[in-house]
Image 1 (cartoon, rainbow, N blue to C red):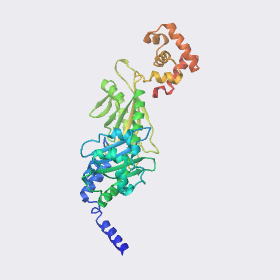
Image 2: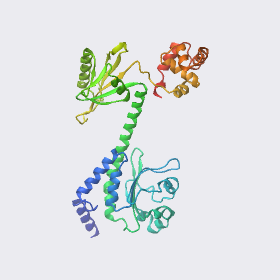
Image 3: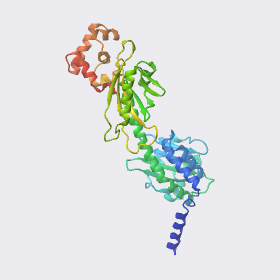
Image 4: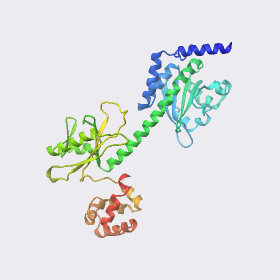
Length: 396
């Protein structure tokens, strides 16, 4: 008879899944939307946690993206009904070691009283010293563990005046937990992509390479600070009507042809297409700007009408790449004075010009140069410059 009753209950829950969690379809849809949107928010999942706090009648809902340890503090997002959690620093430094509601079996929802026993939970030093002053009596939560090593903790709490978490509350947490896990995985992947992008963008900026990204219609989508500075000069390359143009009519026709060619190329991951190059003249006999036009690889599932389609890499020979003196010093075991001289020589200066720039005597510069030769293992200034220019010092 009990098996029949359980089967009947499962059938009712399957027929009316939102009855079991105490939410309407509209409320549950709003909550799921907030969970997936949370992966893109500046403070991730703050909106979703606020919603969960209301639906669970909780005073606090916390998502711990990185649990604390002796080596580092926790990274957590809190939704609090009575103002911010003022003892977060204390938890990071001390109370986390007393917390009995940790290391749960992954991807399952537990109520603290059920897991530890009501008497043990209320008798714990963690409850007496940390939770009770915060008006926290009841706790529910789950640990989220992914295949690539992410370990998050989801926790919600209620004050002493409230009732314990009900089966419906537990069912709500169980319903959202798989979605929260997927959103955490998406957030991790987005963070990795963004970190790589910032790393590569910073390297390109230090090498003084301008980058311009065009969409499928040839309109400018994005440019880095180096390209912005070149375009503001309005000498050789300009932006007109949202599109990149060369001021010389003949060169502009060729530039537009290369852009259209890049747009029509294969541009997929397996065959990213061939890069083309053009030099752009400038006024007053200034050095010509070099431009490389390259298709941006994308796969067949790329969406949107303004997806990145073409990248232009722009190099002005008069803009010197930036290298850190400290990087050069460490890379070749030079003194600070020797590193400064090496950078000046790599900048195209003669030894005398470098001595003048650095405000040192010529004999001092020659002594530094001999020491640099010895440390790097070269005997000619031209070889030294070639070694410097081909080294990783521009990436540091």
